[in-house]
Length: 186
Image (cartoon, rainbow, N blue to C red; front, side, top):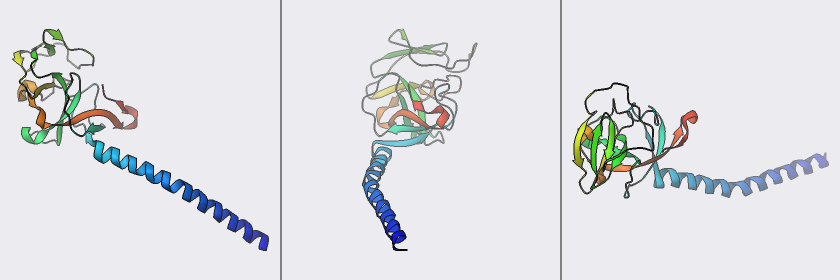
């Protein structure tokens, strides 16, 4: 019987040593995850189809806190309280920066005379709804011009006007759920 007690004590010692060795690394990983999710990023949910085909309704995304260097093609989240949209944020793509001239013809934006490119648009063949054409607008300093990728259903700068940078809550960088749609946002 004494032999079995020594084995049981040895097993408990190994378990304690393993737990002690794993505790601090796991605590560090937890701290890093908390910092990433609550200091560097926040999470947002896509509501609606205005960013199809890239972002789908109910996609969960990581959004940076703050946005101080806008770039064409960035997907951003705008504070929706100012626009009474009923959502916590409006997700749109930056297509024009301060000082840019933008014209929209048949749902395609032309910035400084060059057609937008680099991402997929969802435009319906023959769609002639409101906002498919827009005369030239120069984006004022401190503003960005945003459009949804699904132009047929998007509430964006065509109706809201240029968006003040101080209403931009952050840049959407990745979808983390659902798993089958996980990836970086381009």
